[in-house]
Amino acid sequence: MNAADHPTILIIDDEKCIRDALRMLLRKNFDVHCAEDVPSGLLEFTECQPDLVIIDYYMPGENGIQGITRLRQSDPHVPILFLTGFADDETLERATEAGATGFMRKPFDIAGMHGTIRQFIGQKAAA
Picture 1 (cartoon, rainbow, N blue to C red):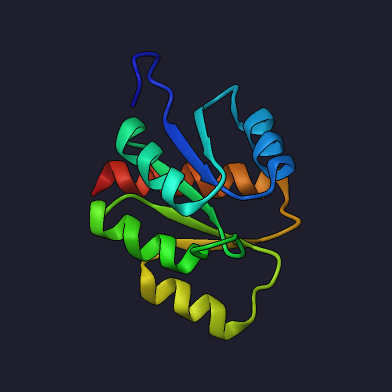
Picture 2 (picture 1 turned 90 degrees about the horizontal axis):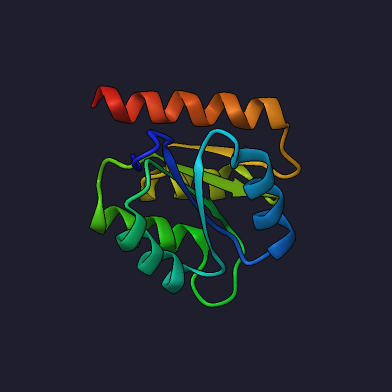
């Protein structure tokens, strides 16, 4: 966690409007960092060492499942929330197998997002 004792969240999503919306919703209680694709997300991950990663599925280049796999190579314990608007069972199973801690569908519920984040960050602290 950062010096202000706010947990750090990294959002990896190619949609600027989603990144900006999440940043605005979460910035009061969390230190929020953003990246627009998997390669820049991995760099930001190394730099900010987040307590939680939120990653989108569909992005140019590497998709979110590929990103989860690469994040897990860097840190097998950080909670990863898989965010997608196209969540069929096969995709969710692949994300879980890659190492996603959980998932949320777009559009997401703000209260549900906060609750899930708090739950996952609490799980990391207990590990």
